[in-house]
Length: 279
Image 1 (tube, rainbow, N blue to C red):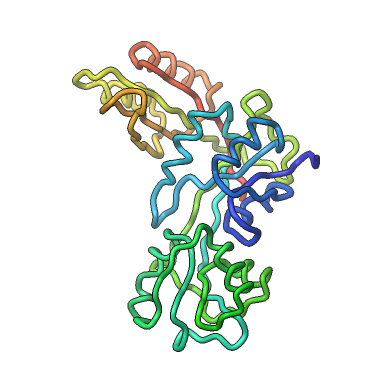
Image 2: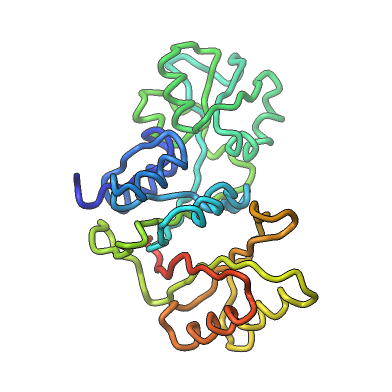
């Protein structure tokens, strides 16, 4: 096994593969569950998972999987999503009937579909997977929305670029490793540690002011909160998990004190990782 093999969900040409290529040798998996299993079972040292998109929001299933598996976040990277309309030679948006892609990609290109009422959006499991299917079908009436790299890999023509409704379409990816081996020495690029982030998840007692108290453990120490996300806690009805990102490393004395304070009243606290950015 190559020391820096990186598991990702999707086909070659997927945006997740683009993230994986920055870090090592990509290894495709069909589902996110398989990606996490590859790291947990040490079939790969690392994996990349999309965690949020500036247009589509958070990928909730991956938040759940971070809690369920013995993994740690060791880096993050941002990938600009640039959707292209792809088809076989001779295809045209004016005469085609269907456009295949991942549901999130289709939702990000609503203006394109409004301008082309002849085209019906059809859900596929993956952006690059839709390009692969179009290439295999050889049907000029079917098109795909995927990355430029996917078009090149599957020999498709780029009929139109920049399909997304908004230009600021960026996906944030976590690089994860097994919790027992959470170093970054085998990565092709090393994360910038000048300004590190920490991600945690916690649960709270159902008492007035408990979330205020939890956030105060950070605010009173001038720790910069960058994100908070709540998810239903499946083990108890109408209880919630709170996922929080903030600036600082878990080993910083100020952060250590904040986490110690939080553990005094939170019913559960787990540090998901402290990490830098890979450009």
